[in-house]
Amino acid sequence: MIRKIEHLGIAVKSIEESAKIYDALLGSACYKIEEVVSEGVKTAFYRIGESKIELLEATNENSPIYKFIEKKGQGIHHIAFDVEDIYAEIERLKAEGFQLINEVPKDGADNKIIAFLHPKSTDGILVELCQEKS
Ligand code: ZN
Image 1 (cartoon, rainbow, N blue to C red):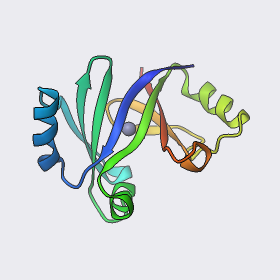
Image 2: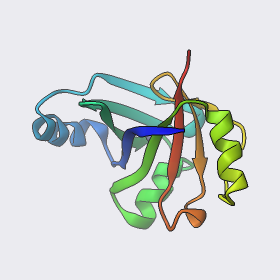
Image 3: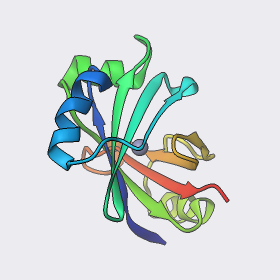
Image 4: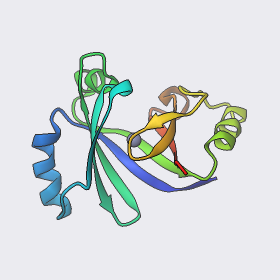
């Protein structure tokens, strides 16, 4: 079951530069900066009520964030839904005909296991499923 929007992922060229804007916009500093080496990204998280904003900066030129910014510029990169049981949700969405980028969940930032749906099957939006690690 999809329970809420967990976070919006926003691709930025520099977390250091963009953090100045988001600190001022949201009225608080990010609560966590974390690198996900396997994804080639550095992330910064802001809490907004029950949801979050995740800023994503590429750490190398093979990073999906580097390629995204090259193609589309800075901006909204993905929408992440909080799910109760990511394995069950992957099976449900596969049965519905959605194309999964990750059929097996992997470690993400902020103590989550995650899986992405291909934007081809969601009318252009990269969708992340995430479940809190217990
Ligand atoms: Zn995310």
